[in-house]
Length: 168
Image 1 (tube, rainbow, N blue to C red):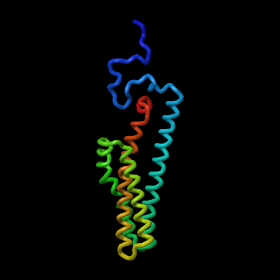
Image 2: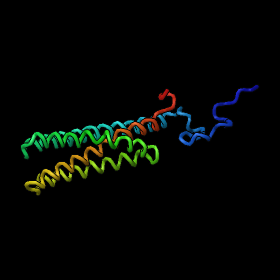
Image 3: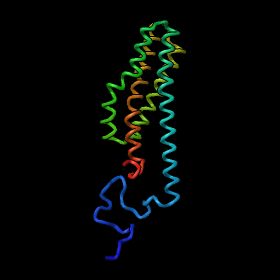
Image 4: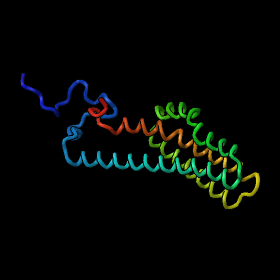
C-alpha cells in the first residue's frame, strides 16, 4: 500500500529497447534536457543542409542544362531525374530505414549529394560536347537518389530522438 517511487523497477522496465529503464533516464535533469536540445539542433541543422543542398543541386541541373546545353527538353529530363526518383526509390528508402540505422542512411544520402556535386563540377570543368549532357543527367540522378533517401530517414530519426510524450 506504500506508493513505489518512480525509480523502482517494474515488471515492464527494460523491455523497450529504445528507452531501457535507468533511474537517470527520467528526463528530469538539466544535463539530459541540454543533451536532448543539442541532439535536436544537430538534427535540424542536418535537415536544413540536406534541404538546401538538395534544392541547390536540383535547380543547378535544370539551369545548367538550359544555359550551357540550350535544351529545354533535357532540362525537363534533369528535373524528372532530380525530383521524380523519389517516387520510385522512396518506398525502398522507407523499408531500408526500418532495417538499418537511419543515421547511416542519412550519411549515405549526404555522400550521394557530394558525389553529385563532384559530378557537376567535373561536368563543367572537364567534359565537352555530348558527355556534358550524360554527366549532368547522371549527376541529377544521384541528387534525386540522395533526395529520396533523406526524407524517410529524417522521419524515422525524428521518431527516435523525440520524447514519447511529444509523439502522442
